[in-house]
Length: 109
Image (cartoon, rainbow, N blue to C red; front, side, top):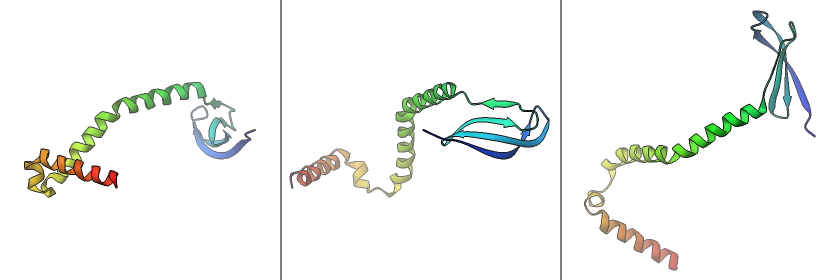
């Protein structure tokens, strides 16, 4: 069973309109609630809502990953092109064939 931990910190309370001591409660490594020790106003974290928000963000990141990777690749290529051998740019088909042959030979060994 995960133990609840509490910590005392000074935060600005919008209810008191001042910096006051607060009790912060954790469940394991996760924030559970924050309570003002002066006015006893308590804010609890709704884990279901957080899961929904994080799930949406995760899905957005997965769906945008191919685009972000292609952008990164374009930027990397723009930086590397001046350093590549001219032959690689002039004869890409021949170079690709040579690379495939080398890889096949290595996999056969």
